Length: 184
Ligand SMILES: C[S@@+](CC[C@H](N)C(=O)[O-])C[C@H]1O[C@@H](n2cnc3c(N)ncnc32)[C@H](O)[C@@H]1O
Image 1: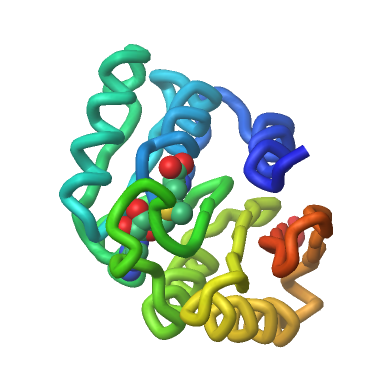
Image 2 (image 1 turned 180 degrees about the horizontal axis):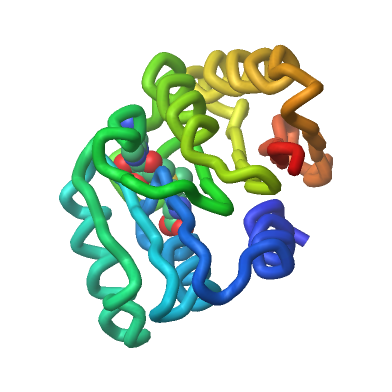
């Protein structure tokens, strides 16, 4: 199973109708649509991306599926999320890197990613989760993945637990998935 699918399965078990969640890298909206479907119209999803194309593609996907009412999209860096999200959330999803069929020069970068992760942590309710997929197979992604893994490993274990998955070993440099939970 691809990591994205594994993350979706886990998020589907973790989140409930009425929850609030963040998609920190909306891209074409695959993760946003999943989150919106789970939380329903009584919940809310806050989505972030720095590309206009991502906002437009995600808005269209949401409208097609009738999920627009429970989503707010921001064309802003995820490191700014604490200025825009005024509630605690049960999940924050980061699918790092660039859009495979988009502009490869627009990729997540270590400094803003760590800013986004710290911001998401400050918004996570007790029992809330961070799902982060990193892509060390390209040069910027390699540096970023190392920094993200170091960041996760340095979290205070009294507050946070984490799992580190690397299942796609058939690829030379496989993506990796970090699942971080705030203790209840
Ligand atoms: C791998 S794609 C995300 C895929 C997406 N979740 C989906 O389901 O299609 C990574 C996205 O992160 C976005 N991005 C890059 N830097 C960002 C930042 N600082 N804040 C928010 N999004 C950013 C890119 O524009 C790109 O759309």
